[in-house]
Image (cartoon, rainbow, N blue to C red; front, side, top):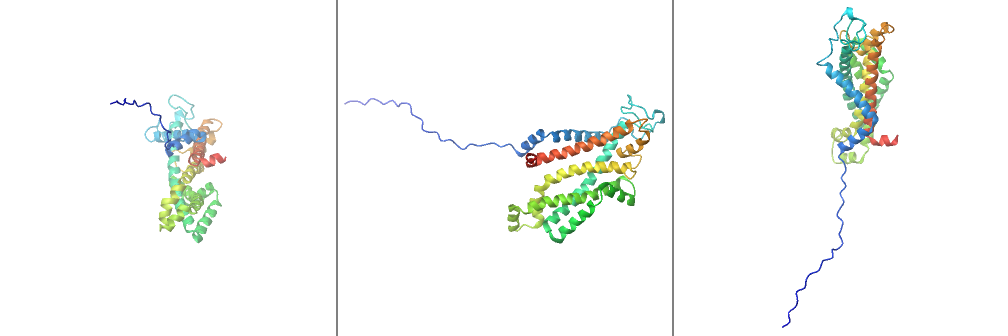
Length: 307
C-alpha cells in the first residue's frame, strides 16, 4: 500500500486588514481653556497685574512694614529709605503700608458692590427675559433711567444724602451696577430662550424657574463673569473718586483716593505722594480691564476669531 506523504503547510497569505474605527482624542474642556488662556496676551498680563494687586491686599491682612495710621512729624515728607521704602507723607505715615492697606479697602468695596449689582441685576435680567411684557418694559425703563446719570454722579448724590462712609459708598456703587447686569443678562438670556433645547424643555413640562436655572444661567455665566470683572475695575475707580471727594472711606482708614486728595497740596514739594497712589489705581484698573478682555477671548473664542 502506498503511503501518502504528509503535506507541510506553507505560509498562509494574510487577507486584507479591515481598519478599525479611528478614535480621535479631543482635549478636555479645561485643557482647551488653559491653552486659550496661555495664548491670550491680555489674559496673561491682566492676570499677573490682578494677582499682584490681590497679593498685596492679602498680605496687608496680617503684615505691613509699619502701622499705616502711625504718625511721626519728625519724619514727615521724607524720601525712600531703609525704614520707609516709598517714603512718608505729610504726617510721617509710611506710604507703602498705606498703599497695601488701601488695596484691601478697594477690594472690599469692589467685591461687595459688584456682588450687590450682580445678584440683583442678574435676577432682574432673567426675570425680564423669561416673563417679557410689562415686566421687561419696567426693568428696561428703570435701567434707562439709571443710565441717564453717570456712575460717579449717582454715587455722589447717594452718599451726599446718606452721609459719607465706606458702607454708603458700597451701596451707591452697588445700586448703579444693578441696571448694568440687568441689561447684559436680559440680552444674553433672550438669545438662549429662543434655542431649540429650551423649547424642548418647555414642551417636556419644565417651569420657567427650572429652565432658567438649568439651561439659561449656565449658558450665559461666561458673559456675566466677564462683565463682573469690568465692573470690579469701575467700582475701584468709583471708590477712589468718592474718597477723593471726601465721601468714601473715612480717616484713619487708608484709601487711595484720599491719599490723592491729601497729596495735591504737596504736589511740587513731594510729587511721590500723588504719583504712587495714582499708579496703584492705574495698574489695578488696567489689570482688571485686560483680564476681562482676556476672559472674553478665553470663554468665547468666536469673538476672538471675529476680531
